[in-house]
Image (tube, rainbow, N blue to C red):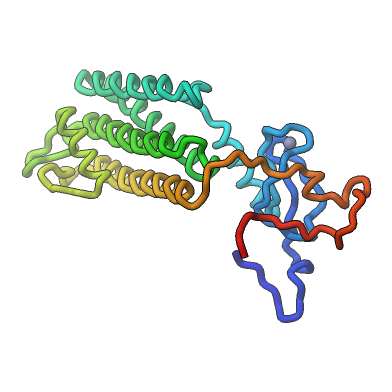
Length: 273
Ligand SMILES: [Zn+2]
């Protein structure tokens, strides 16, 4: 966190303002004098809105993106919670269809590739939502299981892309199109960064190399989300804690609350000191 403060200058007088902002209403309020950057609060208009104290217009933009990702439910089709197995079955069916289409022809390969990319994008968005936004899942074990299944689905989806790469690979020197089983096997070896080297991209083809680089990045990201879920699980008990309401966060901005305290030194976190 880069906040430049010179000696003797209170951070309260720093030019960067911390603004209460709701991404759902696209509304902001007066800057927070206590500068509680990142603090969530419930939007006064609608509790499901994503609202937090952010830093400037860039902070607002990131919060709007976060709200989009949180509300993302493309292949999940609003099937969260108990209906997770149905959402999983849909993904498996889509991948199965894609794998079935691979060896047919150019059009079929193009459709298969699109389905594969859709599953990869879907999986990454879900993983992001679970790992970084709903940090303390009610069922951590289920979340970790979901993350592992996501990794397997992603590897299979990349396998579809490899199987759709005509003459993209080789076992020696002659370019060949990977059979589906070999393509999925190659994908799992790649995402695990094992790299046996029995199959490798052919020398003159660019697309398979780009796909492999993408898969390594996606694989690293999924690994990070699994670790994030695991870390939040062991560091805190799952709990349903709602963020404070706007008026609880800024009591001085509404009718005067009868108070004997010196004014707003309530503890902000559960961090033991
Ligand atoms: Zn709102």
